[in-house]
Length: 238
Image (cartoon, rainbow, N blue to C red; front, side, top):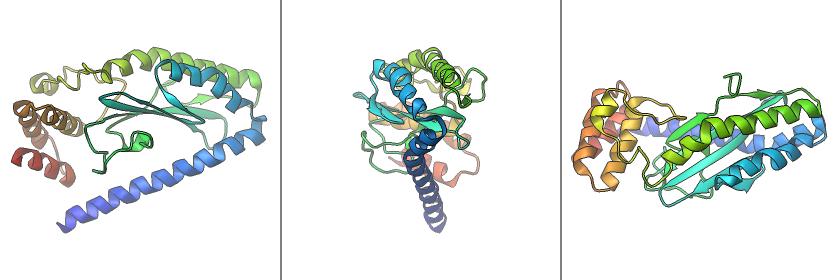
């Protein structure tokens, strides 16, 4: 029990620090860009990048956007480089039926990327996940335009497929999963954690046999994670 309490506190501390950093970034990003490039970068984000998100059903402003449907919450965050010469796109996807990664109830309007079960940073054209620019309007415009294209090409179709009512995450088969015969791109993660999420989704939808199969698989591949082992064991006891 002491081990579990310590583990939970460490998780909360980790996310708390992330939230503080994100809030600081949201407050400071605009100011940094205003000084460095006269505010043009933020204008370009609103004019050229945000419409691509809204076309896919996202709502929001500034650097954070969310898309909520019957089954899923998708979160997009625009993260600026500390040097002020680039930005990244962080994407999260979370099942509405489940608690967040800390085991807390989810507010769809406030969920952050780092609390989603599925998280990724979208790959840029240079595969480094950062779209970089110098302090010129042409360079910034090219970076924003390329990010828009990369989002459309590498994320739009895949996100629509995963966040729909017929998501492959709802219908995953443990035998195929064990063979690596699945595609949850653009998201990647540890098999044991993904197995836990799928087991919980099966359980929520009343497919007890499938939930147990993924729970047993997860226990065999959980490694040294005390928290995951406890979660799998709890599933098996229900």
